[in-house]
Length: 254
Image 1 (tube, rainbow, N blue to C red):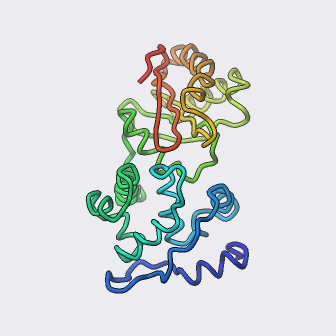
Image 2 (image 1 turned 90 degrees about the vertical axis):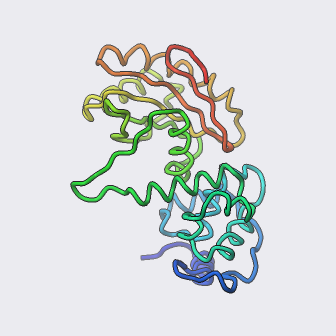
């Protein structure tokens, strides 16, 4: 099966999928120029994350902590220093910061490593607990990092705030709030969810406060509909440029 255009395949063959390279010697001879973020996102949508080289995965995880600068040189430098993708993700935050990684990105790496270590196995599935805005922000920055910008996602939780499902709201939920709320309520009933919250992956060209204002009518509609199904409506989170703003459905902003 073709995994991407010829020039991208060649780049991946040069970089490799290195998991066991030691610290002695550099994996890359040069950190090279920056690629376009949107083009990388489009590649993931076309071919999936498996089509990315190790340094490209790190590069995309750096997006949240490096909103405007070139991330490719830093991504390759981190692999050069630590030796592999898994070593970068498992490195202590202080070591990552000393190597030049922003504080936000260092936290995201640790979150990804922790999630990978607790991946559900067969009947021993362990659910991820999202019991604070901070934990939801970390989840959005790690697990939703490759989702399309501008997307609105619904997170369905059980009675202990464990994640049952994470699904994109179809269509244009801000323009058609009634349809979005109806879809969300149907899914909540089907999943036997006890609570729901929404997350907006804000585009780089949109301010968070503007995005939050745009989402308010949808949030109010969810807050009004949820109690009819004995469902708790936790709130709405706007995430972008490594930052977040939130408000609960009763109007309290964080």
